[in-house]
Length: 286
Length: 126
Image 1 (cartoon, rainbow over the protein chains, first blue to last red):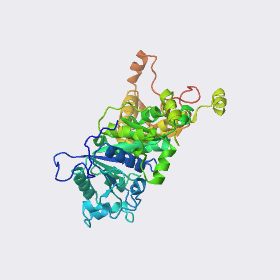
Image 2 (cartoon, rainbow over the protein chains, first blue to last red; image 1 turned 135 degrees about the vertical axis):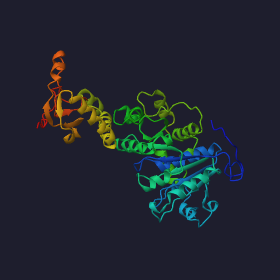
Image 3 (cartoon, chains in turn red, purple; image 1 turned 90 degrees about the vertical axis):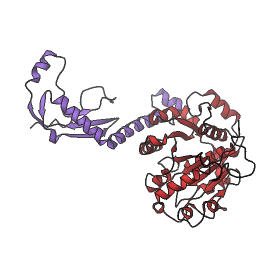
């Protein structure tokens, strides 16, 4: 399942500035409009899952003022510099990139904690993402909630978008708004997060089809609302690292889809899924 | 058990309510996001009505509001005079009547039957 695209043993990102300047990496912004739907958790897990495939990945925390991606990755004690230090040329990019402790090809560029979103220069942010694309296969930008300056800065420089939605009226409405703002340029794809198949079955939660009948976006994946996600965040170890969790497998399937592999469509969260019930019985590990 | 109870007594699942609310709220979001579309619709509406009556284009008001389970379009179209020429056209096709003016709820599912337009302001005829 986990085919390494570019095997890396030396702990360095897959590419650097001198390696292949002609081949640009992909810059993907993770956004949602609404807060608290799991953008940061998804960004950390997708970054981890892509890095596990051997790709060079940098996670950029664009949530200036509310830094959190470092926490989810368990890197909070290693962050010395942040994105504004780079944008304002106090430190070099290399000094600011924090190597991940679990995935050798993953780097973090943390957000500034004691600054504000409108202090970011949109053009400089665009240039930064551009230079990161020269060095990494994937530049994943974790966008702040909202549709104001922080959103615009996070989106600047990205050329693709993954929108995160939970099966709630408010989240779907906000994603609809964000997709309208993004327009066609970003070819937004959808990840439905916090799905609870049992509730869907009882008619107490919007199903995947309900959500996507409205949003009509290419579906990248569905992540179940599983306690293991919370446990993983408590520990600062993204769930995607684990081999024994169906949710980790779902993250890895999304990563495979991002990388262009033809992975079967997700089945979680739609009515009458026999395999899902089976999976819940077999894989129902804490 | 509660599920079964609700189902027996015909209570609709909350996910269906969520779906319906979402559909409505997005429709109204999209309408308010597309003023040029509303302008175009207003123009077309007036073009059709003008076949039968002369209306005051400058005083047309179109708005949208939430009415129970539906989004309603309210059009207030002042009539200046009745267009006599239209009489022949109508007479030749008796099944078609000039459109009723005033409150025009959207065609979508309404709770109680299909008793024509909800009572509301009549078209202001000048």
